[in-house]
Image 1 (cartoon, rainbow, N blue to C red):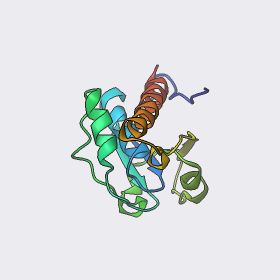
Image 2: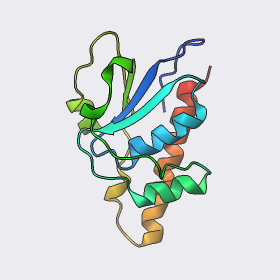
Image 3: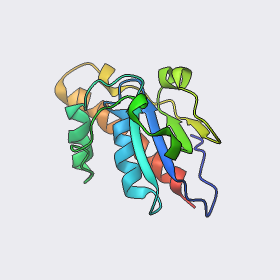
Image 4: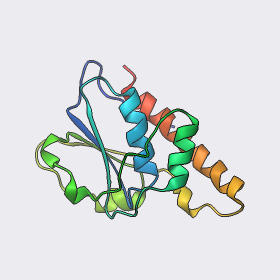
Length: 146
């Protein structure tokens, strides 16, 4: 897995994690980024649409000590784009439909499986959510690693 990293010594003013519904993947990435990003970095997540915060995402993040229950699902149109200099899309749909941002904005794409599509028992579904959570934490840590 190749992860684009921030250049050493660079502090981004604002990073936006973007996915389709802003219910799971981008929310988890936002939570991990608030934990691992350099001090002073502003972090947001948004979706092309807003589907509501998924309770399973909240649950699996809580298991690793990251509370995202206060975050809310929102659309990219509700975010102040002037403060964003990096957009990380976490699904193909968001990557294809990502709006244009003015100025110099670095675009990064992470193709992450959608845990909402998991099927089976509750334990099997939560296992998929945990797998995605762990992938996102690794990517976020690697992105901010100096």
